[in-house]
Image (cartoon, rainbow, N blue to C red; front, side):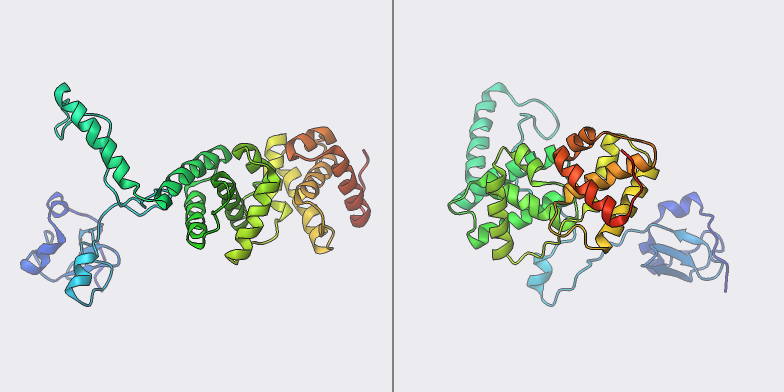
Length: 322
């Protein structure tokens, strides 16, 4: 078998891989026995092993069509669909720059006409109550997610879940902001992202009780499989905010793992258990933090931390001295 060479000539870089079917020759040995490897995106000479082309674009479709109608309706290119857009991105927009295709400014006499076109185009793109609801809800979802520091994938999942709520009629009679907050909380629970009801309630300015009630309704009607909140999700966050080291984080995780194995967290709030584990670990590793400092970061009371601390110390037989 010939050894594949990695040297490419400048002329080879500029020649497309399609020409191999038209008698295109290897620039190294002038051989015409070229092979196109679609998986690696390479054109290789079978005689001398020279890589004639690499990173070749696959211009064919990645789907199958069984008739002319399917082939015409399926295109390879185009912007990706996004659930965060009210129309999923399938809409044109008239921008606000008042410039033509060459970049020149539009005459002042035509700007009023463009303003009217822009206004009516925006009105026509929102033609019914569902689209108006989505336009308001997705804007609010993006605002709350930005304040919570959620990434794009979580926003897309939240937007998709909200659209399912709209299809099921779960938003009727409820505030849009409340449903949006409940959807974000459900997606965060599913993805294992440590965001509590208190945080979402504070950013959305909606009572925690209302968000919890709506969340339970959505989970029941849509049959969502939401796992129980694992206290370990909060360890990294608490350790970072308290400026503790890696040894403390590792010790807190070990304490929690042992507590979970013995069933000590059942019926107790995950935030309080995680905060108590971090507090105990900080004492054991010499990076002591007060109960008040840990309580402020975790959003729980000092009494809660003391209660969880006593339970963990007794059940796990920890040698901790305050």
